[in-house]
Amino acid sequence: MPVNLPTGVERNTGEADEELFTLSLSDLIQDANGEIVLFNDSHLRRLALLTEAHELARGEAPHHITATGEDVTGFRYVTFDNGVTLYYQPDLELLVVHERG
Image: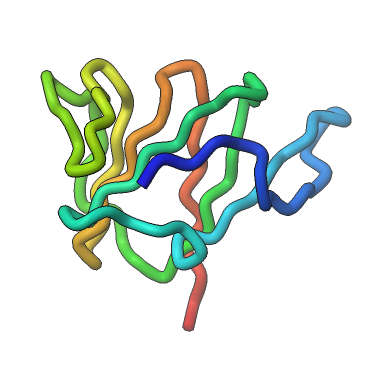
């Protein structure tokens, strides 16, 4: 499911007075194929993603359309061991922070 940032994000203070927004992967809604698309409409530089899942793969998406009809070709992606793949725009630095459950 598409997610526009920074709706529903928690604000943390990062280094050098730079804002670091944080989302929890468990709060995001995935589509029928386990895919989530983040749109960085606010032009954030960095985003922290909290998750108990482990990262399996990361890279640039080839030609791909999600189950909800979003064209994520050229987006960055990260796939987790819980079956979720998160797509995000290439200008966003995604920091995956592992939570211990």
